[in-house]
Length: 92
Image 1 (cartoon, rainbow, N blue to C red):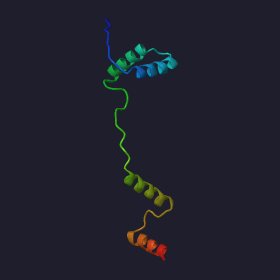
Image 2: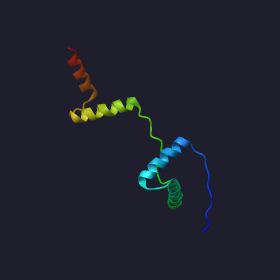
Image 3: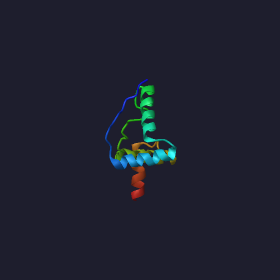
Image 4: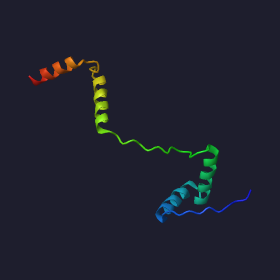
């Protein structure tokens, strides 16, 4: 099987960081890149997640937290009338 030369450009700082990590793993940059190509072919795709993490919505997060607190204290099943009565009682 013949081999071909693949060249690409990257930032020098990123290349040096990668080499430092790979040195600790006992690998060269060339070996790592060959591994990436082999894995890409074996998996017929990129072998790691390429999803963007969703930005948390602060309003949804607050509602989820309130729901967990309500469950914790056993008040998740309260009706709107019961909630309003509790609020009215607290305001007295």
